[in-house]
Length: 186
Length: 419
Figure 1 (cartoon, chains in turn cyan, orange):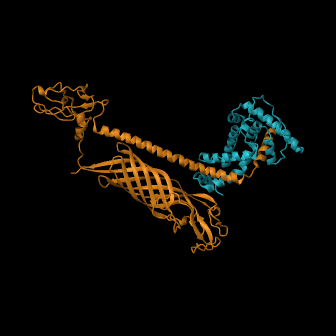
Figure 2: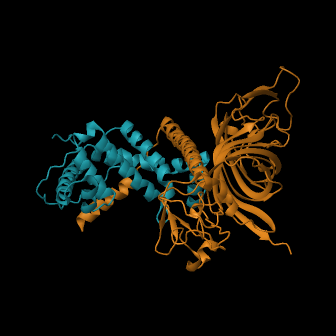
Figure 3: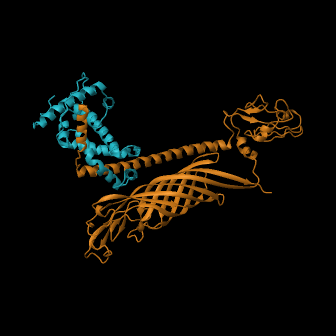
């Protein structure tokens, strides 16, 4: 396997083999990321395609200061957020009410589900909750960053996250009791 | 902290998630990336062309303006100092340079006289640059009134009126002619971008050809040239033009008044697209796994980098344009390309390529701008490689380049005085 520096250099030179190698290296993992942010596999694949086009477009800006995988992942997340804002079916659900701060639940359930099952559970959250949960709990963005990226108040991000987390924890408990989670109803 | 534990567990678990994207998405993503690069070339080439056209138009207008200025006195906005040299009363001579020459500037103020202050001593000619001999004494020696001349504080006449037609005739005579032999040479830095193709003379797009070859499993067996019996029907993939560029510098020396020769160093990059070629033979030939079922594979971008030493002959018969032809020995310094091998399909093997090449080139150059020994020019450029890229190529396989070239030239002039 080619090392990252050579791979990036070859991609910048437009070598199809290098582009294919970079795609193959990250596509599976990145589809997982896109899957968590969207509601269908088709949408996830759309985000993946758009995201990789962005990756190749901005590859010249990658300075080898961090891991290439983390850089690609950041681009995927940004692409996913833009996708959600752009498409009507997500736009309607991507509403963040300026709610009062919701106390963070102290429940700390075991995560016995597989990665795919856990992703499916996160995808059942309303889009706003789903997005903020992914960004904070999985990607590790701070609420200040999330507020800036989504154009919402930091407090809104916190309260939305608290609600999302509480909901997910309750579903996880149900799942651990071998109950299927009920679909969240707004 | 329990919260942290939960988040970390979720993060760890989700980090394991990997899904397999469909092959359609893979193909379309990679194709979209290639298309984007192609679109970028299609954006830059017309932009460069447009800039060159605008530049040519500007140069044309500027040339016309300069032509007017070069032969006439400066327009009224630019005052022209006039110095009148003292002369004997019998034959005074008025010398009026059209521009402030060092001689005029060096003339002491006392030597500068006004036609009004010294009637009969000196008569400024009607033409600002002409000389005149007035009749001694008499009313005819009196200066003609010159409404276009005003006396400056330094005692110099400033011309403020419209340009005098006589000026344009006489002005060049005032220029001192350098004595000795003038040796001129110039250094040009240039760059160009455009299309590069691969094929016969002038070919930028080569359609797919056909050839009969022997069975794919026997790599040692040569092509079946006996006819249509047996063997596998294989297509030679088509070649399409892609972008190319050149960068270099050239030193030019005059041969005659209109001819000069030049020698330089240049780097040329050419890209062509071959294919679609069968993917299984894309990089390596694997006996037994090679598919000769036709070209249903993917396209491949060939890249060639050449370091050359162009030897040019330039004909400059007109101020605005020049023509160049040249011979270009070149060395293939880098190659990443697929070439057809009847025994192994399409291979990326550097040994298949000829390293030394000889090309011919022709260029038309339009002069856009000139200022104090600097000049900017540009125009179309064509190059053809006399040799095939590939050793024992089954088809005509010559590099063709059609580019727009932009050049910045610095002229140097050395006057060697004869003793």
